Length: 345
Ligand SMILES: NC(=O)c1ccc[n+]([C@@H]2O[C@H](COP(=O)([O-])OP(=O)(O)OC[C@H]3O[C@@H](n4cnc5c(N)ncnc54)[C@H](OP(=O)(O)O)[C@@H]3O)[C@@H](O)[C@H]2O)c1
Image (cartoon, rainbow, N blue to C red; front, side, top):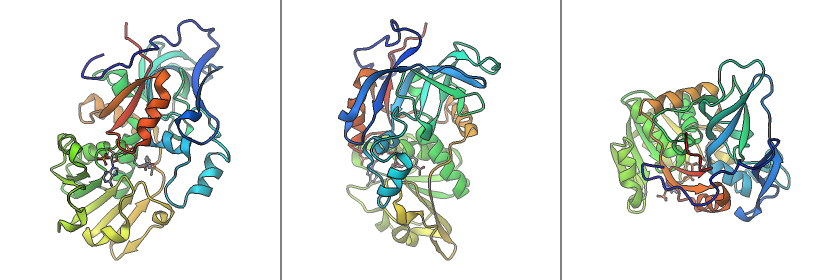
């Protein structure tokens, strides 16, 4: 392991000695804190026609995993969330939205991927990555692992990256536009800053003192420290305001938007789901689309060095509840990674 990523001690070869039809997975059967998670033996999936089976080397614990485990949802979503995710616990008990790994086996008709190839995949809301194996459709959210990244780095590209990409696309972000990113140090925020800057937008990030250098390093031309300055009081106007943490509202940001300005309520509550309009200014909200083409584009951008992974901490698979506890703080920088300790041959 290199580049300052410290491997957590412990379970290096979780797959080594069990029968081939069994795998280890972290299971969440009821809502609650990290203590509700249990490590269990589960049937190992197989690659059906049109699928590949991926042996997972690294995954993340995202804010999405935290929300599904705890049912701590944005304002107004408690009932809708229970109906959508599960009444007493998640209907999909293996959490985990994204992974990096190698192809373990392929379905009988699959020619696009070969056994041993390194890949990233983003099952997203279908989850299932907090396990040793995950089957994925070949025409689904799967792409080559960028060769310049470790598995632990590559695993972080999709959750924040696809959300940022979705909202920038919906906003029609253009070169030269001024973009304010509130929550610039999170998984969505760090990707949003990088992708907007890459498009030629002029990015201002809102973050706390300890993350100022990080946000600058990602391409923000200005940074506002929210512990000292209210972004609404600096007298600047923006074309796009992306709130990735639910710290504002369209009503509050409207006076800071230029004509045709767009407010992105990425972490909004139920009232933010209304497509508000005020003259030519408007708000956009809702779940980000999970598109296979976005996964391929994120892989390409990372391979080109445009999108850099931001990792807060790496945990081992056996430390999954600790990784969740870290995400629960709401203070993580970029992504929290869970590594299976795989060492490439
Ligand atoms: N619409 C969608 O489809 C979609 C998709 C993905 C995620 N989301 C939502 O988007 C939100 C962000 O996700 P994420 O994964 O990026 O979260 P995250 O990584 O857990 O966000 C943590 C970061 O937020 C920063 N932060 C917290 N409060 C802040 C504030 N008041 N101002 C500025 N920064 C603040 C923290 O920095 P400090 O420690 O410096 O405060 C920390 O670095 C979540 O609510 C998630 O549910 C929505």
